[in-house]
Length: 411
Image 1 (tube, one colour):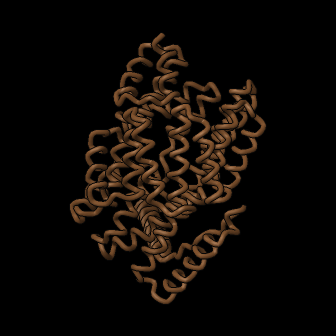
Image 2 (cartoon, rainbow, N blue to C red):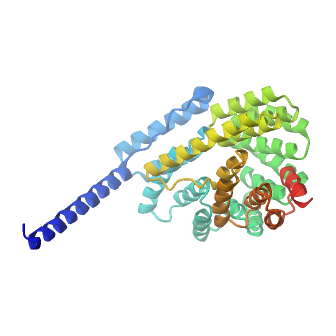
Image 3 (cartoon, rainbow, N blue to C red):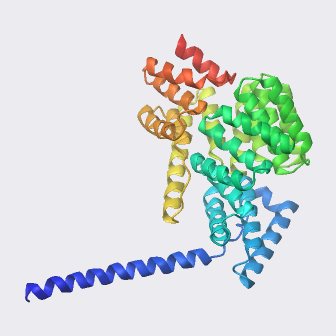
């Protein structure tokens, strides 16, 4: 066949294929924008609570409203709020962050200044560890709604994670000045902890607990943080008391179970600690519980067990990452967590790669600098370790792990 005919024909076929793919993508994107996302069934003991029945019924009612009126902004916002709440309770970040952001984006397409949609967007970005993006969103909301305490809470969280501690303190002062409540007190507590003031942090966290309703997830989260502050201060008796109260107020609360697991580990009750960490993970699949289990095995001189658990975490995290890619999600930045887990397997090369990726996103964060300092120390690069350690200690943090690592690096 004549080349003058073949080439134009091939070009035409190519353009038709490209056009078909583009149209198919557009239709797929449109379908995705219209898709209704519902609450997923809970598993385990939390599926039997009155709280879950009420939340599930509310979610089903909102879906029914959207079936009748797909453009109902109020229903989309309410569902996004339920998903954000359910994220921490269930631990299913991949699904709920993606679904909530879908509804948020649909609302913002219609109403770019919608307060709830913008704040939810920032909360999801924080959940996904997209801290720079969350800061940008938070600043945008502040310009529109400068008298909202909630906005300043977002700015506190984003600045803390990015290592902008001065700005975080300034925003926390504004927040508590507008509304002294559980949210503002808990943030003040965290900032005092970061700056080495454990008595002040405990005082503020007590106020946060008192400001919340007993048994509510937000209240028990703060009560567990209060227990952790006592734990870090060396007062294990008070820590155990608050973890126990939290379990009484909110049965099967995974973070309280993990707290008791750490207390058991400190008492060298290794079997009890192991059971508690496993129980916590079965309720909420938070990798922090498995990491604590691996650290427990190191403490009890079961190194191979520790490495096996760490490898399981890495496998699961990579699987979740692939799942996020397949569903076209922005996904979570989890390099800090990956670096810490690779450390447990003594793979310092991969630990360093992930830690540096996290450092490039937020070079001022003291926890990221501590992690890099420890990786370099374990790799035998002492001078590099010291340079990052200096940055890690710039807030005068009294965190026991940081101080222990600093003593080893500087000796």
